[in-house]
Image 1 (cartoon, rainbow, N blue to C red):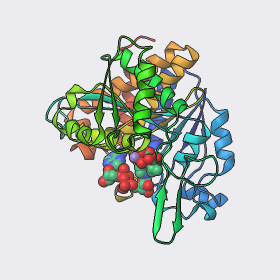
Image 2 (cartoon, rainbow, N blue to C red; image 1 turned 90 degrees about the vertical axis):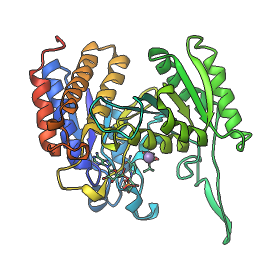
Image 3 (cartoon, rainbow, N blue to C red; image 1 turned 120 degrees about the horizontal axis):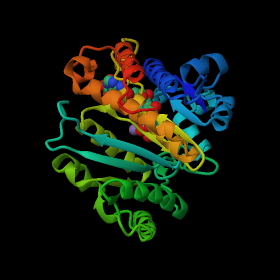
Length: 360
Ligand code: NAD
Ligand code: IPM
Ligand code: MN
């Protein structure tokens, strides 16, 4: 199993190092046969190779079994013509990672803004929608026909909607059997009505899943008022981007926010948050987001390759993480604890190596 590991920018190198350490511990304990290959993207790559995402890196990721991508300071990159490519976008499009799966759940004892317990997964379409920097075959979907007019084109396709729907429905069938489609079809009468209809068409293949829908603005309010009512949520790219940050923050903070970008042939672990330049280099970032993303990648690999030991390793990583988070003394600073990034990773490593809770 070859895993490409990309440190990224800001807190990226710190949380990626922590995640690599945890994966290596799981590899030793469960005999996964992981081989890590480091690649550079972001400012380090710009300096060395003139691009924040050199073409060769995409090829290495395509040849690998999985990717772990640290957050990148994309907003601070120079224009594309000067080498400023967004690694997230290049990988999501380049590896056709069409479903961004973003769980958020509250945990007993961890302070959270949600008044009630919550446990939901937002499945975000990841290759089209309002992402004008990447949603066209050639040229950007954003342009200015005259100096005083700016236009952005949003793309919704049958294929894009149906394939993300299938991921969301399959997930709902394994969880509490409920899917909520989020849209703005009262305004986007063609494109969002189309998205909802395409998802509903696929839903007919999943009679065990109860499907409802919600306008995106009321969804933003309901997430605060009553997040308990949601199980799996499926939505277009930008609504999913925004709502997943909201859900993560309600559930305890972005430091806990894991995700994978998954396609039919590739999968990439990536935290939901950005490069957090405000806390970079201080050993205070919470690596849980990326560690749990890596566990989700192991889950995806376990299913794809029918290798149960990968699944056991994922459970062991989750278990170790939950045990540390359950104790106020072994949390990171964002959660009011005292552990730095490296100390938290060391504690995880120690637990994974020692625990014999799940027999190998
Ligand atoms: P951000 O998500 O980086 O940070 C928002 C807030 O959350 C900050 O206060 C930060 O300190 C905190 N935070 C985030 N992750 C944390 C962690 N693991 N532990 C503790 N605290 C954490 O958002 P931003 O500041 O708007 O963006 C910074 C840069 O990241 C920008 O260049 C943006 O374009 C980029 N970005 C990248 C990704 C990605 O790589 N997937 C996602 C979002 C933003
Ligand atoms: C995310 C981010 C990125 C996205 C940005 C940095 C382009 O917000 O991964 O959630 O939306 O693609
Ligand atoms: Mn985002």
